[in-house]
Length: 458
Image (spheres, rainbow, N blue to C red):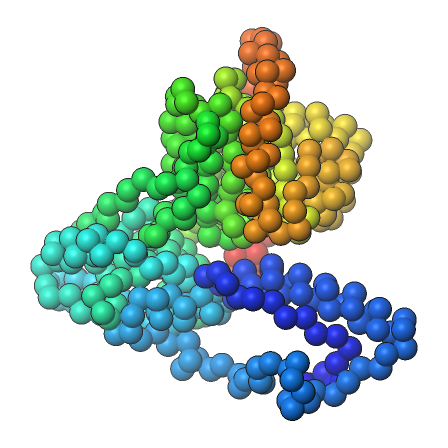
């Protein structure tokens, strides 16, 4: 060990298809906290640290060599799961390396790129179908389909892997973007769109799918698992359409907004905005689109809405959750309910929702002191209604029971919602109008553009 003798250790299972950054943010962080507490306890009891001893039966594993760029090079001839594992090991930084081939003017052109957001396509029939649509014999490394910004790449053993994000080069000056925004647009346009089917309750998609819904016992779960929690204009519009469909479902009485496993939401997509032809116009399109998602939550007058935060939430994502009738998270969630680090006033109806929950004075403090808020702190001040479990796994195990209890006690909530008068909708419109006017000025201010560039190119 390069840091000397050891005060405490903590083991944890890696039993999910996690990226490196997701492991750091969840299992590793939780294990580190346990180890720190264990070290303090050992120090208090006068137990000295011990040197690393591989012969000790409790010591598992061994020190590994540092990974090099060669280790990050993807071999497309391997099985899709091997490729996905290699990408996950480098995600979200520095990314895996590989060449993608696309037909270009009658020839296959290879593009050396940096790869992120890998997901194995679980439907062999989909892979066979899109391969048949190609005008050439498909070999590993060929891009064979697209879906909502991601591309499907042929691998060995007749399977394929989705890559959701790319960088054109490893340089800091290269933006991480949805894959179809990095590859030549003329070639991407010709790619077939891979079909995607419905899911049973509790199942995660066995394909790339960033918005999906499942239903059980009158509860509809709306998942929106966006890379790093950033929500582009297109993603917001697709989420809004999904919520509109849920609103029309007569068999659904409770709607649980689940966000993603790593992040609930972090608001507008700054990388996509930076890459846009006009950053001001795209900023405006993005903020109005996410506002429409929040409006869709408010609009569900015949259903009880529950925001269940599996992961952290920041800026507009934290404020979006507050539109739900009930907001819950697990104990490991951290909220960042502020915008000013990006020189933005913010929207998502926060000037209505946040004071309603925590009061005007605390709302001012939260949005100006620019400090993170732990889940238990958020619960104590009224931002959250409940903290369920210590981690995302425990929250997911308990959320259905929570939603059933909410449904059993929904009469009063629904009575209040149905009694909402036109004056309240007018008040909400006034808050949105005022927020967007402030945001219009922010979007035209050089400070926002400078801070955004520093953030996306860090």
